[in-house]
Image (cartoon, rainbow, N blue to C red; front, side, top):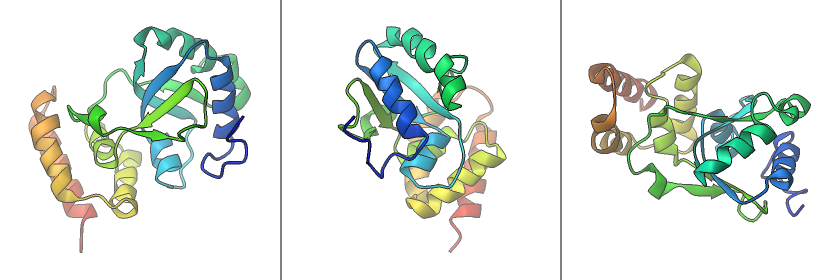
Length: 183
């Protein structure tokens, strides 16, 4: 357990992820987003009981992960934490090119890759819930986010693939930029 004393991975996530790593039958790579990334990677004091992921490699490992540490697993009951696959996510087309590893070298089989902060913010655009807006406002200051990067990625990589009301997404992004990037 090479990360047992690591300050990077807070409790109770440290114990949960270590146990998941031990139980996995093979190497798994996850593309992570959501509140876990905002809290653990970017330091927002925010409670979350799930680790959202948009992709898993290899794809057929999802059943193993869900059985071991999904919402209804014994580990979820034990740790009150779980993995959750986000089946529909709004991420810029080239998000995978910008992934970075969380906790490199800490696990034997579990590899957690986080979505870059601007992509993470854009992933919250469609739902735009109060907690999503709070996460984006936090990322604007903590990272800090660049409004030009947000607009450019939205226009080039996300808007062309959005299913639904494009004007609503356009208005939401502009509202965020006006609200959160005040000087």
